[in-house]
Image 1 (cartoon, rainbow, N blue to C red):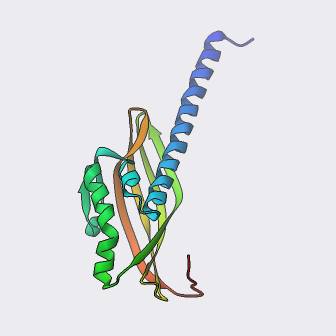
Image 2: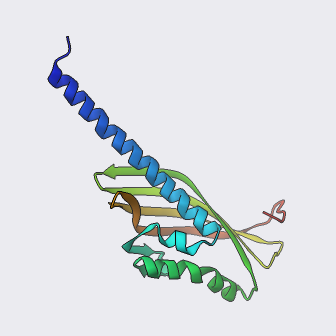
Image 3: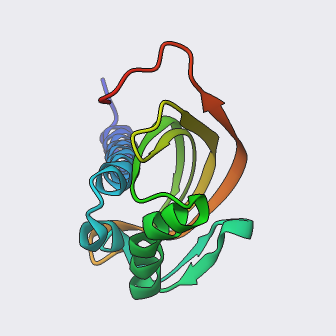
Length: 167
């Protein structure tokens, strides 16, 4: 016969585990949404993924504090890349891999890897960029948001083997 106290404890433990798994799923979706909005250049939606006082730390590529500043950072990123290359246009596609998330109540931490393909002016050369994102998240008013996003950029190299346009 099962002790009622044991049953209550088991249900409580399972409830905690389900909440944690739901949080991990939501955080994985948040990371996916980041790349989706970046690829679609949807700066308003991208900015909305961040807490109002969030920090974006891209090391030597720049920093931004606060949702509005982070949104401005991303909206000016592609024009800056075009200017630096002396180009007239850039296409960027960014992909996330292997998210690993740990949840602790209303805070969480995550790491994911990315690859990015950048092409200027429909040239025959595409540049592959790879690295890692380290994220801190906060559950604010029932919604998970980025509290901090830190970029560890590994390298950018030309990738030309069997390259075809369009993407």
